[in-house]
Amino acid sequence: MKKIIPFVVILFIFAGFSCKKVKKQTESAERHGIINLITGNVSIVTKEGKEEKAKVGDTLIQGMKIKTEGKKSIAEIYFGENAVKILGDTIVEIKTLVTHLATNTEESSFYVEKGQFFSKVAQKLGKGDIYNVNTKTTTAGVRGTDFLISEEAGKSNVAVLDGSVEVVNNTKPDAKPMVVSDKEEVDVLEGKDMVKRQISADRLRMLNILLEIKAMREEIWNKMREQRAEILKAVEDQKQVNKDVLDKQREGDKALVEDQKKRDQEMIGNIKDDAKNKGEEAKGAAKNQMEDAKNVNKDAAKDEAEKQKEGMKPKIEKFKVDKDQFKSK
Image (cartoon, rainbow, N blue to C red; front, side, top):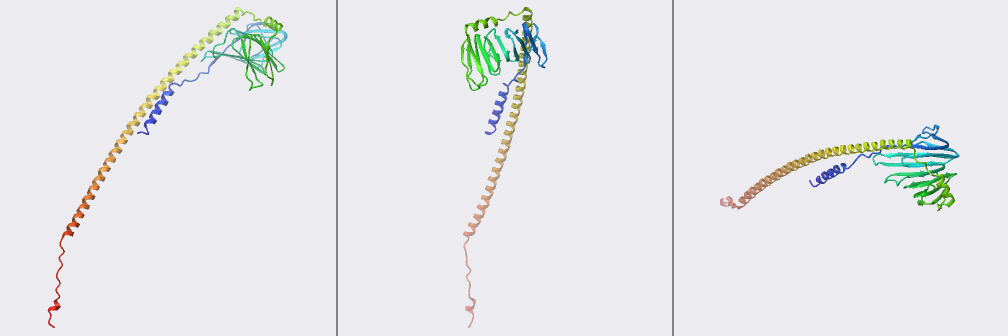
């Protein structure tokens, strides 16, 4: 019994832990960017590699690229309340643009192959939200800010107008990230240490003029509202799916616990019956041994009594007469 009971307890503990397991949800909904302004020559490259001329109102999804040709070409794009400005002679790929439904968090990441890419993050990102801009040499992680990232011939520059950005040199994985804040910039070169500096007054004026974002057009805003409503509905639907999965898991675990409990009870009952039977067998065997011992002792006592009785009998030796002595000589 002492060896079985801990095993039964472990089974109950296991069943208890299984009640807490919930199927991890990885569903996500793609978000859209919408072009708000175009100047000059701007094109979109689809996931399949097809290049098309861009126009205001076009929607952009992850996997697409935006190309501007000519120094004066510009594209302004809204991703929800956040806006980006793609300057001349630039190629940017939208790497990730999704809402994770299970956590209702947003993930946005862009890759600048060459040129200049300005981000205006309208508000501090929520817990779990991700907004990254990458180049060959750097990764800039954002928490609510306005900044410009440039990439040219393997050299990147991150200039922060407002807020702060965590900058990583991708070519030096052991180097610590650097936080670049208001009116600061840093060059990122392959294999080199980063050194930040204050943005010069002339460059700052130029950036403020160049990087001013136009207000979102009404039709663009309406599209964004519709998209937001769709995503919110998808989030609510996912929450219901999560709840249904959790309820189903709980019911399944409850059934498992009850089934295990029944089997444990049957096992304990069998153990008790087996122990009782073995006890009865042991008792019978002991009784038989006692009877055998009693019989053996009785026979031995009888033999000993007979032996003693025999020993107590007087031994009478017959007198032997020599008859020859009475014969006449």
